[in-house]
Image: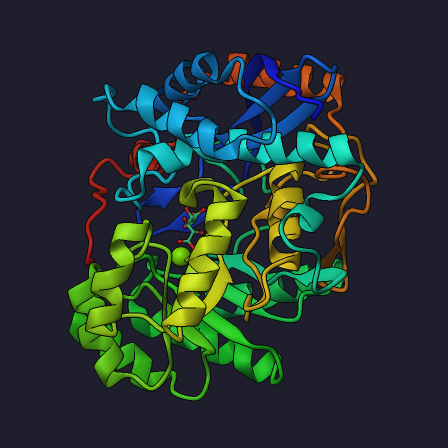
Amino acid sequence: MVQDRVTRITTTPVAFHDLPLLNTVGVHEPFALRAIVEVETAAGLTGLGETYGDEAHLARLRGAADALIGTEVFALNDAAARVTRVLAADTTTGGHGMSGMVTGSSTADRVLSPFEVALLDIQGKTVGRPVSDLLGGRLRDRVAFSGYLFYKWAGHPGAPADEWGAALDPDGIVRQARTMIDRYGFGALKLKGGVFPPEEEIAAILALRAEFPDLPLRLDPNAAWTVETSVMVGKALAGVLEYLEDPTPGIEGMAEVARQVPMPLATNMCVVAFDDVPPAVRADAVGVVLSDHHFWGGLRRSQLLAGLCRTFGLGLSMHSNSHLGISLAAMTHLAAATPNLDYACDTHWPWKRADEDVIKPGAIGFVDGAVAVPDGPGLGVELDRDALGRLHEQYLSCGLRNRDDTGYMQTVDPSYRAVSPRW
Ligand SMILES: O=C([O-])[C@@H](O)[C@@H](O)[C@H](O)[C@@H](O)C(=O)[O-]
Ligand SMILES: [Mg+2]
């Protein structure tokens, strides 16, 4: 048996331009941060992974990288054990890339994820097959994504309006949806809520429904509402939403809402780790789990989650944060090989500049709201070293070291506080 081992791992933080997208904890800063992981092997292969770029996470990635030197490239269980061992002594907190929105996910899973993806990329290159084949084989050639709408300012404070302009009311949201559908062809829409009083967000959803009568719609206020408010919104949008995402904090609150609203509740906040599954199932708190390989421990552990969802009769969708092409490729391979991925996946892709990425152009992109599963070996995307260098320089010069939507909002409104629930 020919073995190949990890000889070197490089973790490079990068920053790419982001727009002033509003959410319930504040507003996106001018740059989003990511970390790009390159795993090199004795046989001369390189695998790629992408993850959050917050400082504490970067430090944990570097500690894990040291512990992974010497790992055999097919030994994913050994890789997971090494990461768990090295993190056992870690007492640092934060750095989860969510700006205070999700805190309960497993640190070990978040750290393992980019290395697992990179090792799968290497395995695929070793055997000459796409990652989706290593995950059991693709069940679809194209993976559908949803158009992710955000309330937004016209531009960053002090800067001219960006190409999307303002979206601060139902008309602005409908306009944004139209542009996004014209550009990308999405067949489902998600509105990030929790920004304005719920009545205004209900009006925005009803305006979307009037404009796009056939498209599945979702609303996600990131736990900005009390149980009572969530029930009010759920009833007002009966028959309009395919699911209501994280209306209220915690499994108990979600269960209370679930008992009183007609549509399924979805979550990427109260079920974010395997330990959350039993209590959520017992309480019947959610109907849909949004998986995310970046915090569920990689692609294979996301498949484990998919199996649990099937076992317990839960729907499965996919969560996203601001990301680049390596993540998009990994999400696409995973989704293609997951039988019960019942919904179009989330993606922040439209919000990044088309000319800013760390992969060479052409391998991956959107047509009719879907991404074709890359056919090349591994993830099927290639690192653009010059682009990586440019985005790393941008990281060094941009001054941001942690995602801080709340702090950025406070530069505009010093009285602003991130509270949950807000209404
Ligand atoms: O990017 C954002 O502002 C989102 O609110 C993101 O941070 C969430 O994690 C996410 O998209 C969600 O579905 O909750
Ligand atoms: Mg969400």
